[in-house]
Amino acid sequence: MLVLIFLIVYTATGQRIAIMGAMDEEIELLKEELKNKKEIQKNGVTFFTGKLKGQKVVLLKAGIGKVNAAYSTAILMTNFKLDALLFTGVAGGLHPDIEPGDIVISDKLIQYDFGELKAGSFETWPTKNLAKNNRNPLYLTVDQDLLALSKKVSDRITLKPLNDRIPKFFVGVIATGDTFMSDPKKAKELYTNFKALATEMEGAAVAQICTMAAIPYIVIRSCSDNANTQAHADYFKFITVAAVNSAQMVLGILENYELKK
Image (tube, rainbow, N blue to C red):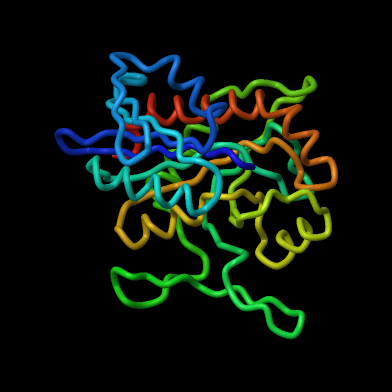
């Protein structure tokens, strides 16, 4: 749930598809396939430019947590022309039917830990949109074209099996907070209160920036665990398969990107 990758799609001359991961495990598989690779350092963030599946891309590691992800996204936006963003990596599954290896394609995201704690009860607040000087929706909605493309790709690719089981695809809400979730009570609360299918530590923060900057985006997660008492053990046990499947999803989107237009 700690790792993520972002894909930013460009349509004009000089624009690129940016792929962002929170940890090395998520971007390493894609970095190995990067053609004409060049390394660029900007404000503490390392960018790798080149081509994947014939598409011009920029690849980077964001770091774990909402602040690191937001900072890396800001540096990315400052140095590259952004047209859309795909954020993908691993997460903790919350839906009762989700198992490690399954992929959740977001249609909405929420920061579940942003709000007010009062008299033992926590109220989740919508975030502020600094660009428009108003409030963002409580649930941030992904780009509908990228969502449609992701669904098409999910029908066309084959994911790596885990324990002889072929992973499944789910579409729905992803909940973001600065906590590695390994508590079945809290995991059930997130599923019940927000209808969230998965939880992670970066997606909604990047979604907030993209919303303010009017950059189309989507978040895609491959589940490494079920956010329960076994989450730490399962995370390290299944992260390799989750990383492979999230990378396959990214490559599938790159290969079929013309379907978005």
